[in-house]
Image (cartoon, rainbow, N blue to C red; front, top):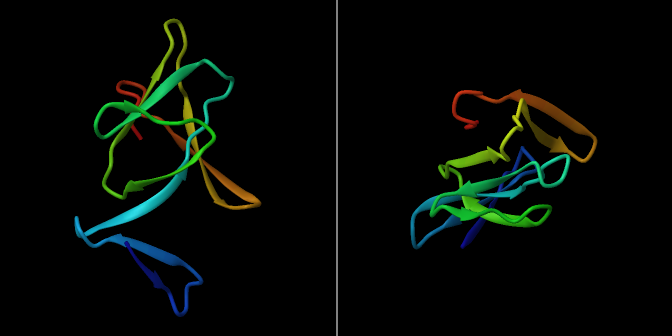
Length: 94
């Protein structure tokens, strides 16, 4: 992994040089608990409330439990700001 510091952006970019891909850090959460699961890339279940690194082009799918429905995703911009993203209800992908 290589870490690149943005001189004017106060951001750190992580690149997996073996795969030549940009990496993102994410934390998944489902609220209320046990409402469903999230699977990414290799179809493995994503850990909940745990910081993980995934490739930027990784597709993740949220699957609600039977009788439930996801209506939005929330993206944390920084420690004090969240934005809500509407889910595509026909396939639960963001």
